[in-house]
Image 1: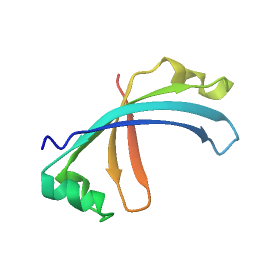
Image 2 (image 1 turned 60 degrees about the vertical axis):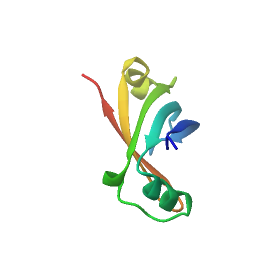
Image 3 (image 1 turned 180 degrees about the horizontal axis):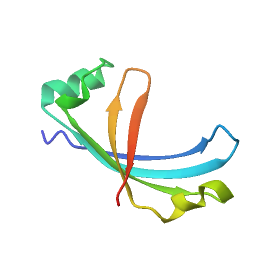
Image 4 (image 1 turned 135 degrees about the horizontal axis):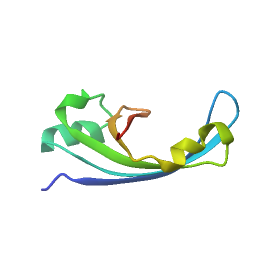
Length: 92
C-alpha cells in the first residue's frame, strides 16, 4: 500500500461578472491507510490528516482576468463527502 492518488481535473469556472476561466489541475493526495479508507467511504476527514496538493494552470480570454494566464499557483485540497474544496495560492 502506497496510498498515493494522482489527481487530475479539468473544469471551467464562471466569475461573478460572467467571465470564464478554464482550469487544468494536477496533484497528489495521500495519507495513512485508515484515513484514505475513511475518505473512500465518503466520510468527512479533517484536511490535516492527509496530504492533498495540486498545481492549477489557468487559461482565459477575459480581459479582467488575463493576469491569471501568467501565474504559477499551488493549491491545498480537502475532499468532503459531496464536494472538493481547493484553496489556491499564487507563487510570488
